[in-house]
Image (cartoon, rainbow, N blue to C red; front, side, top):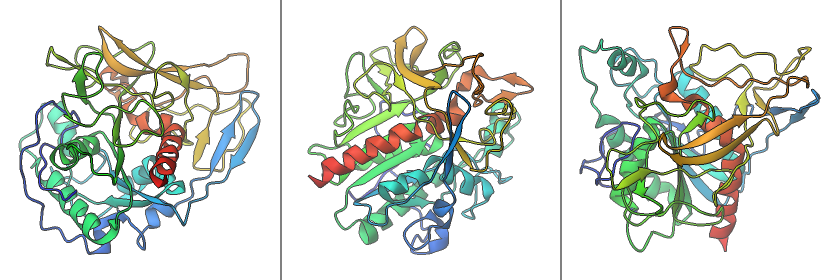
Length: 381
């Protein structure tokens, strides 16, 4: 599985192969160049307890327990999150990197040993300047993939020892992992250590009505929780706000290919309840205020909230693209909130291009953990 190539650090995976690059000289033997890894795991050991908010307004605290004897590994590349003022981030974790690894990845510790490298990603500063037409310089889009490549090589050489591994990414992180997978793991036969990949908030292209071909030539989309060597990919939008023509997600520029969608709650297809773990204080990066979880308001003392029965998801395939349509089953007659925040807010308005990008992983986290658990059990057999 030794890595040797990568490519653009963007969030959307195309159908072509990754451009060959070399790993960076970042020294991943140094613990400080990792957010999380065994023996240097503080951000991933944060409090992950959740308050279960039931439809009748009752609250119940759900304690989180990591598995010290987890049989497999998970390797994570985080999304565009750095607030560094430069085009590319440094390798020093800030509160934003710590918070996103906790919300999007740390919960997998119930099933995996966790590995999450720091990398010199394209920053939010550069992204906002680009989207606003204010960019005066260009970020180096090879730095991030080269760093992740070096971290992956270090992990394989020093930590893997034949263990199964799941790759997890979101947004820019998914784009970087897409290139790593194309260069290393998209082969036949598939390396038996590769359990699968979760690529949230990105595009993976496949033939219409197909599960393989396009972005990946040999690795299929996952159709069952216990299936090994397959890909889970989705970009989420509210069911009543489908992707507009200007979105980065859900569509393919190639008329022979479509954007893939796999529902983490129902990999075989159809609609299913989402087991969400939402941040109690609202979604990261969204300025949309979080309403009280119940009325009359009760104190929430945990960092996360779970809302059984409130959200469901189904992959939609049609003229507006292929995406995970999320429905909120609010009931004005019950005391639980009918609103879940997660939209990107620009100048006080919802930016529909991004859908529910900010909570892609939060909305599906419990389902993703269940999928990884099933894959770990299948790998052990």
